[in-house]
Length: 233
Ligand code: CA
Image (cartoon, rainbow, N blue to C red; front, side, top):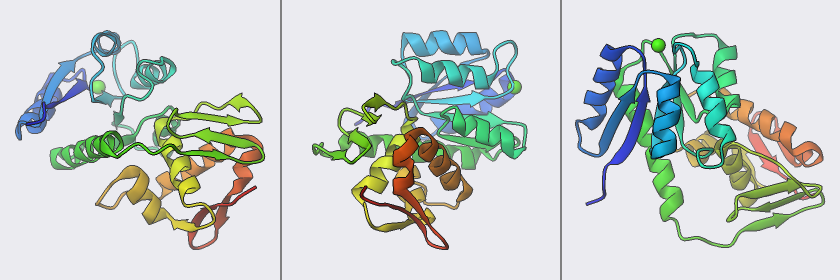
């Protein structure tokens, strides 16, 4: 039997934290710890990085955005999966969350079933990455060099810092180079969802990735009406 996945819930409203904990622990596959502030979250995560963080955006003192940014800046925690919970519904908040490296977000009020499904999807994705047989994979183009085993990406010899999602997106595009991948296919391969989420997430991430890759960003072509294609330089 595999040990339960450790989930950290960062939520200042005790009722919500208790409901989430109860829901996720029900099947016995997850163990949930809860903290009520960003400070406590950073300390708990530094002590023992969890398999996934469910992070409320509206926290006293240190906001969820700040916690996310700090986690992504620290090497030890930069790849910890984060699902952001926001009461705000504006697109700019969601885009900011993804930009800061959150893996997904849910909007309050959320259904506990939906949250649990998203948590499982992120955990499944992580397990797939860990259990798939490692094959040495790299790419060397005119500007871009990528070592997918070492998680090292450089453009013109300069290291490019990608979020985990951007890295997986690049990997998927490069592995399927010169082939068109639809947004749905990318969602399935990179996000691992079996239920519908906004395809706009793909566009947002591709946009960020292109920006970070500078001259190599042009290698990711938009194929109107179809999706995206990575072309050889
Ligand atoms: Ca809150």
